[in-house]
Picture 1 (spheres, one colour):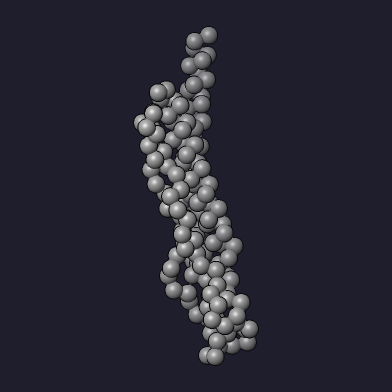
Picture 2 (cartoon, helix red, strand yellow):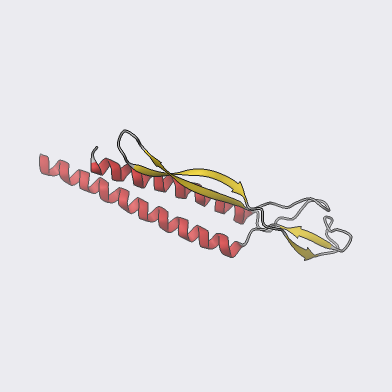
Amino acid sequence: MDPLKSILDISASGMLAQGERLKVVSENVANASSVGASPGEDPYRRKTITFEEMVNRETGVSTVHVASIDRDNTDFSLRYEPSHPAANEQGFIKVSNVSTVMEMANMREAARSYEANMNMFEAARRMRSQIIDLLK
């Protein structure tokens, strides 16, 4: 197997995985302030993403892929807002279990990982171009 092709495959899979992670994070942030529409109804539940390693049997190259996108089952927090239509008898509403601070940290980490994979992809592409120039 061409080592430069392996680098391209690995970095491309990393960019795809981190792109999916950014989609999940952005959905979480967009719904962070949601509440249940009626008393007893649950608000938006935070999504989590899990990655797994996959090995191409032909080439032996290990790549990363999304294993699953699940729901975070941590408890919802309660906020006292007796005038809200979704408030229970005590005046509390359920608030989404999304922490915007945590999501922003996840977004920054995913963006940096995406950037690192993109830099590796570009480096492999430049090396391949230089090899072709040398062979001319």
